[in-house]
Amino acid sequence: MLRKSSPSPYVRRVAWVREIQTLLKEQKVEQAVDVLKLLRKDLGLEGTSLNDILYKNAAFLNLVDPISHELLLNLARDMQCPKRETDALKSSEKICRQLIYHLTPHSKWSRQNVPRRKSQACLKTTLKKKLTNDTVDLSGIPLSGRDLHRVAYYLQNNGSSVTAVDISFTELQDDSLRLLLPFLGVLPKLTTLAINGNRLTVAILKDLIEVVKDPKKFPSLAWVDLGNNVDIFTVPQPLLVALRKRFGMRSSLPTIYEYSEGQGSSYCLETSTEEISVFEEEDEDDEEDELEDHLALEPWSVEEKNTLHYCERLDIIVFVR
View (cartoon, rainbow, N blue to C red):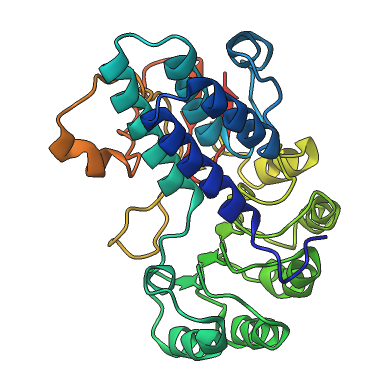
């Protein structure tokens, strides 16, 4: 278990990405590759050479974070198989920016660097406001034990219309989520639960699976975002099965797009089909780089029988026949 005084895993991972950026600018490619190995291992992506990445780990059906997998794959390719030196540096810099955006919180509280001592005030302010798109968005607010009880009380009394709960990057640990699960499980319309970017370990998956096995608990749940935690790297099959049972009449499991900054906290649930990878596009002008950093994905068409589902932040690939 992580100590409260230690930073959340995403802090360490983002620091490694920034170190890779610096090393590549200084043309220290070998050292950058060593840091990349540490980052991949910390995210549970085994294999360090490009061959390992491309072939031995090509099937990442149930990874909780395939976005990071693809970004790191492309970064390794740029570093080990560069085209032209200037193009490789530009491409690697772009991928690093995308990784940083993907692995960090984007809530207004995070952008304002709210001190921990003021987190209770932020929480009170958020819970007093009228819900936007029926979403409880607490992302980026460090939650203490007292805060968790306040959140549980709020859900118990105001949860009838809640469709999404975002408690990502709130420094949740296993015991914290165990406290909230009974209150989250009875929300009748909850479809999206974001718990990414926390201090959760693989041990909490047993509790989560036991809860979702009961069809009366989480009756409308579509997906749980488990990415960017301590050591949760894959989605357990029992969890996938339990979610599938809740959507037996649909052709596929829903996927969650990462909502854009400035659009509030509403998640868009889709049962889309085909998608073009964000890395198949050619490099565009620098003025478009900031927009690309947000990893905006294009809508999918419905034409193929065998389809590849690609989702952001939630981060899982689902093949549907």
